[in-house]
Length: 199
Image 1 (spheres, rainbow, N blue to C red):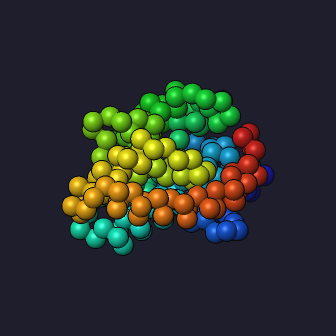
Image 2: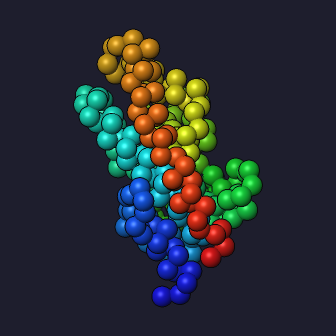
């Protein structure tokens, strides 16, 4: 195993404190095939772990709310995969990775319904954005404890619509879980920063 391969493997599934779930096998295979930068793999792992916490919370607190759990987890684990093509966007702003990511996933046989998250994770205001898209976008923000009121309001609206409760009640519930997840942001950021962008 080369140093680069070992670093990528550690970023995707190595022991971390506090623990982060490993990337799903299907995603790990894609990352290896694409010779993914270790820092990108670490980022995707952190966002995937946060998405896991979010979907667990939604399932526990909103059992009647239908959504595609596996789509959210796959979307979170692959949302920035286009940065394997546009590596500069790992350290600089840019959106070229979004369409590139969707194209890349489609070219590897990923269904359009799953590949879409690579292109939609930064465009949650689109009318076509479903709860799954909103949860992937939310995971991509809250992993580093970034609060985005407009995005959170959209999630709250979906929750309130599903339960019939007042939006403020759903906001309080969401705020509590986001605050808890955000408390470990420094550890996730340190994990990501421990990997170089280039090998």
